[in-house]
Image (cartoon, rainbow, N blue to C red):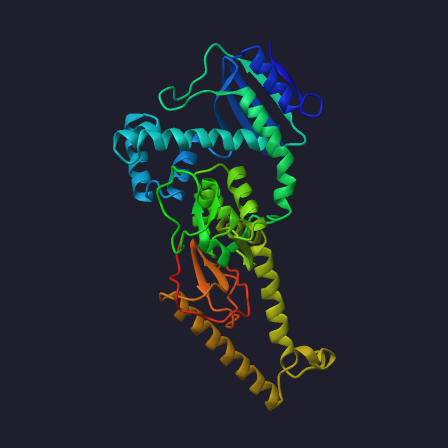
Length: 387
């Protein structure tokens, strides 16, 4: 018998608890607005989850590339092999030596937890549970997760998210380390091998999760980008950022970094109106051209009449000269390796560039762009990373 209803009438915690107690096997489908999530259960334990917009296989590869576990070239090769062999992507990656089995197990677990924990923040929605005899999942690399542990952690996270969002109220906020961060050392034997680059481990002890997140903070990456790179789930990463901020180990910069996807979405939205806008602009141009001649109509609309004054002509020349200078400077910067202190951020296509704040460049709409000006002095001492 199927179980279905709304989350207002029957909360997610109640649903998970019921499935866990009755040791159900099947698929739970939840929908809120345009979001649709599937959670797989076997004998009351969680064995998989996926979002409609994020297929498990592609999401796994994306996560591994973001975290630097594999390269994009390795992922592309693995996908080619998968298409021929019809194996799971994780199995292909392990068998070809691209990752270790422990890396795969950690990635699969975090992927499932990330999706499931996000469901606890849904305020509305509809659910439907369909019992099944068996559900498919990677038995070799995924250990079933008890609903009891999910419930305890999920409810704790739900209570703590509002506190975290007081500090990280924008996923694109950028943090940088403070002087206090240079005296941090890990008080526990960490499973993370990479040391904190550019720090002197002296006197301050922090939990290894916070130390791990601290090493990801470079004064350039946004909170969202740090979350993507982190081996921790989103909540644990953001909680560490919150604790580091409250402890005075990091501070906010004066700028944010919008995601490349935001530019794509913005451009696509503008494309919907590009044709009628182009026609409208063309009509205005023709009207302006016609009215530019000396005529009775031109006298009625002096703003559209021919420019007769030499001062106006000089102003136009000066404006054009300044615009050309600004665009020449833009091309010079984006075509060369430029090392500066974080100031203005610009995204062109899929590439992100760091610009000195004092330029205040203006870029044509044909280039997806964002500049953020600051008064910080330029320093050529840190290489710019292009994502």
